[in-house]
Length: 208
Image (cartoon, rainbow, N blue to C red):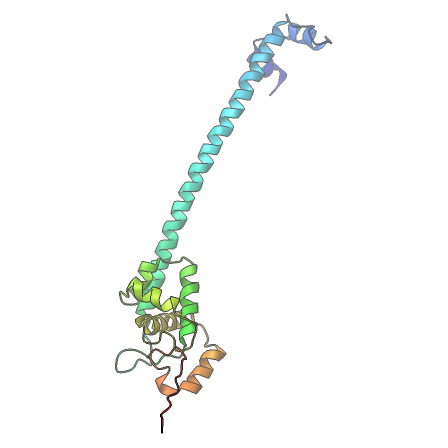
């Protein structure tokens, strides 16, 4: 702002302004029109700055909320698109029952499910729907089972989630892990058994 513009805003002529600026002392110049005009000018400017900050804060909050909604909507769409692509991916080694042999143990599948849902790419409901409308109780039961390679093998989540992550691996071009290859060699063409095995063993004694 130029001096000319400032004086115009304050409603002051150059003469009183220069006389005021030449004065020294706290109270000297209190009757000068520059003092009153400048006081009003700076009061209004300070008030305007505060209002602008308040308005900017409200606009920033609104913009942030809009961005969050858009991000959430995009994330949801991307997640649903991912589920669709995974569901459409075909497996070459499907058996007569429509399912391939399983080469990840229960603990590995529990880990994959927990990590996938933890990324919050999709909702749990959407994930279970993709597995074949599996119930929440089945998922909760499977995830809460004690650790063990065969602990939960009879649960529908084990088989369907394996298929899901196998399709996801193929879709994304992921390589088989060493553990996966070892399981294939160890389990043979049938894969892991689909029956619950909590690792407990019982010894029976007979009295002679």
